Length: 276
Image (cartoon, rainbow, N blue to C red; front, side, top):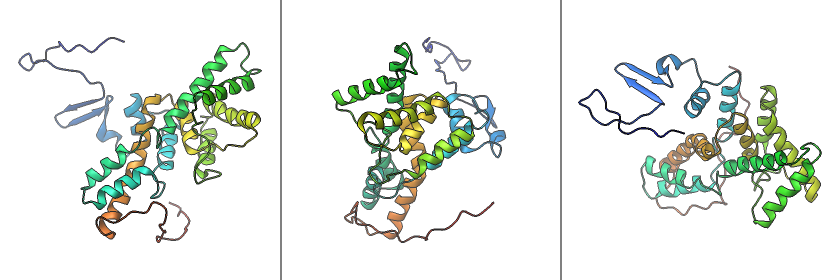
């Protein structure tokens, strides 16, 4: 990859300039990757725009719809995640909205939210093992065994499987169903489901795929770089964090002791989604 030259001179008095290939700003005109933003408005979804920003091209077919669905699947998970507790604690001390939001975002790291990237890298590691074998179909069980040995020897948990609350993560099946419907259940999704079966055969325990594992396979299907996975989770979770921060600031007392376990839900009871 060639390095961006810092020696280019602009027409503005020969000043040193630097380059960006993402967004072009002119008088009365904003272009994202060459597309006018005002023309994209009303025609493209937020998921389409996330795809465009991350990949430089608009999504094809149902890729944008899949991106939208993945973003929705991660929008919130109650008050117990570390990022939400950090945001609530910060808000309770009197921090402004942006400060509390920053506290929540800064709590999304390797052990909270990071499972998506870790799952992506695990699937890539399994693929490398398979690609190095002479017959990937016949050696799949052996490849899974080798992967499990690596993780056991390095004392690493298997990301993307199991959940602290859900025995059957309700988001996973929906994500994989949409992936199948949209024609996105290609090599990575098959690798993920094959790994699930291989783990069960190897250890005799059925570990369900969680939302992180499903999203990991789908981001790989969409050719999103693993190092963007945590940022993807952050983009999805921001609306949920903002809602919790606002609730904290408007109904709770300042400097309260926030119990992460003993809380109750007092909102609207279960209801059906209305037809548009």
